[in-house]
Image 1 (cartoon, helix red, strand yellow):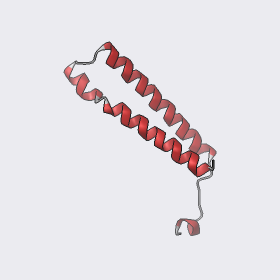
Image 2: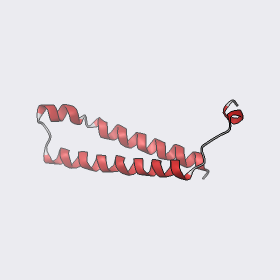
Image 3: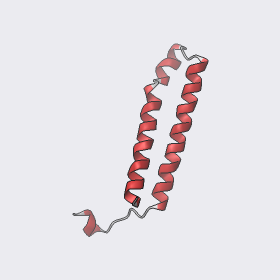
Image 4: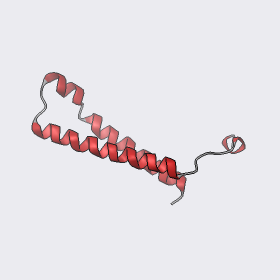
Length: 75
């Protein structure tokens, strides 16, 4: 798999994990005091999954050579 594909896959996973995290709408639940222990455990699991995905994305950015010359960017 080439570096560009690794980066795009890492970005997609980071985006997916973020969407799952905010899908819980923690701000709304917290404001109403409706979080149960199970909700908090699920929230913690999703936060950890997102942190891990962001770490993989950061590693992909550092490992790759994503700089292109100006002439390549124009095409």
